[in-house]
Length: 405
Image (cartoon, rainbow, N blue to C red; front, side):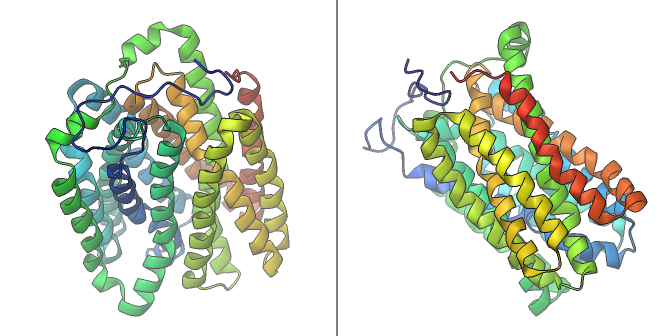
């Protein structure tokens, strides 16, 4: 095997093909799965500009705003390892088809929730749908990527990132024009993509195209101590990076509105940042084949942190927002590289690796938002954001312990 870098892997074993494309090529069906990922994550992007709206509507403290982020993390992230193990054992292809619809229904009902507990219930159920989609989608991606697993994962991740990026602007502009009472109409994109998946990628075809390369159960991974240690380091790396990113997405919108910016402006700002980050992730994944994963991840950590710090210090000056956008691009662009790195060290079981990485690191980072919000009440929101911004730098510690190949 070519060990030029940590992300070069052998082509996955492919089942019988329903199309005529070469096994070495990326299947056009992958773009449909990426689109479904985008629609699924579109709804997850709704939450960012809703933080100040919900805080004002239900008169929440910063700690309670952190509870909203924690609820999303519990459902969308910590549930993923459970779904990953379930899919590796039983397949359950229907989750890929129905998860975006489940997500769309409940997230679209959030703006019409009459009480804060019901808002949290809709959020929890909607995020469960997202949790069900991600490991199944990630497990299908290698089997649709031919001899290009890095680019296949980049396309899948970019679909989700672009959808997530569109979410803040879409919900902000929709609420400004149509009002919260019309939010159930936003179920339509989820219904459309579910219909497309059922038509183009029915359960039989999905089972044929799913990656059937070496599957490793969670129990087997526990027995492989060296691989388990590598997975643990990648999880810690992603956790520290995610604390900085989630802190930005949870509390920065509230900080912006306190500085006098509108929710619509905040939504557009985050959409621009996340869109550019999604496009940058494709470039980073392509460069990883030449440069290896380590220099790119280090650049993400060391480049994004000082820009975030400088941006917070300069706000409300426009230069501060420009630096924050640049920071978000750098911090987000390494996401597909880290996911592939986790898969490499988890016995090539894509669903389990992705669910462990995304579930544990993203989930625990979400739990940190509650004490982080409480800290913000004590030391001030700006100081709390600065503390959140420096957290990704600690990721340099596990990066040193992960081999290049």
